[in-house]
Length: 100
Ligand SMILES: [Zn+2]
Figure 1: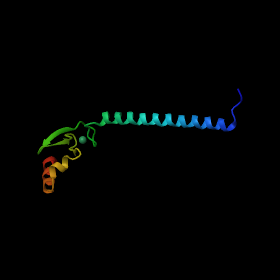
Figure 2: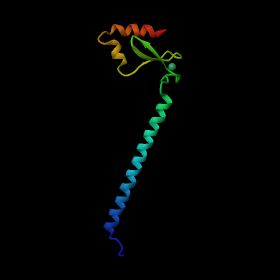
Figure 3: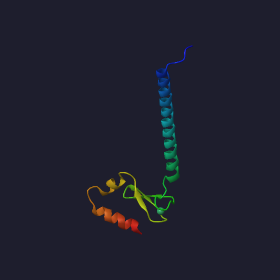
Figure 4: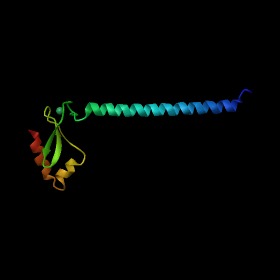
């Protein structure tokens, strides 16, 4: 078996590097996914301000996430729109309601 030419060697070295790069990227992607999952499990329904468990409170047919520890109030995506519609005065009443 003859020794491969330098261009052949370069080709295989490049192929090998590409393959390793692909594997590294796949590995990074997997880690990123695992990290996202870990953070979700850690933070799900936790107050972003103080870290205590959030409670779902029903207010005018929408669910509001409330922290009874620090008073934080959060809305899921779209819930606030459902509540306000075109009437912005209702926002004030919500603020008043949850201020206590
Ligand atoms: Zn809180």
